[in-house]
Length: 331
Image (tube, rainbow, N blue to C red; front, side, top):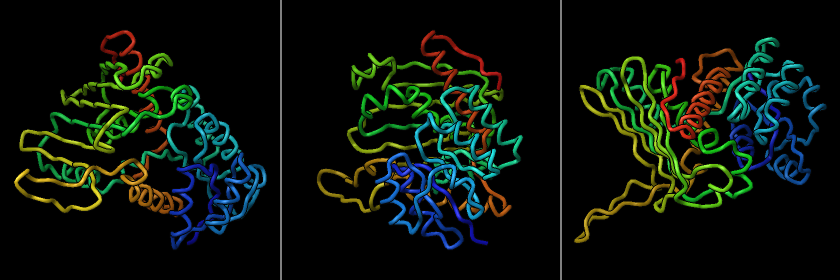
């Protein structure tokens, strides 16, 4: 079965999805919607699609599902429009910056009986998936400590910071989803701290660029997450799981696995430069799974409830950071 998709958003994430859809044997990009006519036309031309406005796209019987890759403030209105049109949705994170609005989006999808998925692409990173498979197989016994490291090579522009919802909702939300996915349990409490060590303008905007969070679970397992908006050696993405019987570790990806050994020691290539390179295959595999879900097959996509729970953890982390107290989550 072949699916025809509408893509909303012709920015960098939209371009990734467009390429993956166009290259898939069981899918085609039917139309592109974007507020920028040039961006939508350029992307549509490259992917063999047409340019549409939103109303025309959602009224088109040829559109089987919608991929939302536009700015966060548009997500809830677009989910509402897709629900009214009966179109399944894959939406980039987050559903909204406000948890109440995110709940409303989930309710709208449920009331209209449409599929709603959230783009937590790191679930599809091959190394992270292998680590989870080994965890579930009992390779290290019961997990005791989970450590997630995520560091961007440089901070985003200030205008992005101001509308991002803050580091916890914008950046660490991926790690909150990964923590839930790997722990297999809901965190029961959060303690967070953060500061500005990279860019003072981020602090003046009310955000932090360096943060650490501890998640507690009912079993006693602990997850520690660290984020930074600066990393001199590339895009740092690592996970370590420790248990009674050993450890599992997923390290950074490099362009090749070649190392040079000489009198100066062992040298290897730096981490890949940013998320576009690091998670290229994850984005492709995630879209593959969305198409399987549309066909009624089993999948591992994050649903709307997963998106909400990650956002609630981000909210709790922000409250904890500001008050410098441990915050129960009710998980």
